[in-house]
Image (cartoon, rainbow, N blue to C red; front, side, top):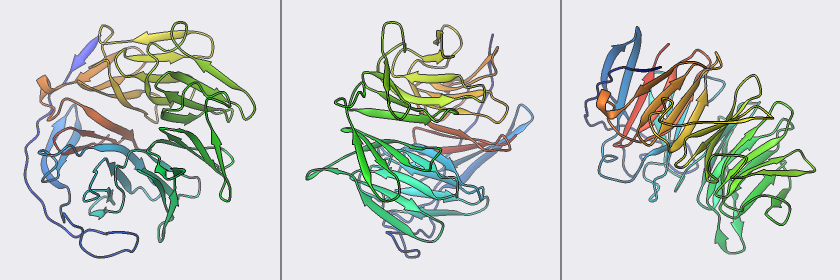
Length: 334
């Protein structure tokens, strides 16, 4: 069964102080921060919408959202001029870090450090200091599309030229020559058994530290291009594809869900697992929630400001954050 609820959004402009480059302080080039444009009651919960001036007329959108242990929320944009970069929300105030160009993924380590992927470099922020790590293939910059932190704290970066692993001292590269199904890596996740999962343009790969196992169509994911991966507390894997919905894998059986089952759209940009084990899906046609039995969809017909939900995440208390095209960020309180 599919349920729909109405979301309302209005637009305004905001200006604020930003944090630029690698040192704290200073004005950003754009100087624009998200501003509240509407607060509504939705299903007994509060929905707050934020808007950033200039995003609506540009290609800028939020590509990932990360929640730090101190409960600050971080938003990475795909700005190609570096003006937007990375935003931080501490529950009352927004800040902006404008160094990251072409940002995409983010991840949080066990000690609370944050990693961000940009074109040609990875950024690490420990709460006080920024550190840059060049991600290059010879003289050519790599684009980082995925970051996963393993149980041993090694950080894995999915790029357009394979995988780079950083153990804190040394870098190791993995490509199709090692067993990876394809070198264009779009997503990554770590399973409870420590295995690494990667989504690529040509299927999914699992790496247990020694052996690579690949899953492609037919008999695996619904479509080879896997844009997002999440793992629920029961160990079930979910793979978001770029046109064929989402594939669920319990270790033995593959099941696919599409718009015919209740998904808002079949292009799955992002996914998130809530503390109760339910799932949220950001698609090319709205936002979907699945509790294991019932699909709930939110689309532009219901009032969403943008068609594409490019990023979604859920805090420990159940607060849902998501971004949509047109320069909007939304907070849905539990």
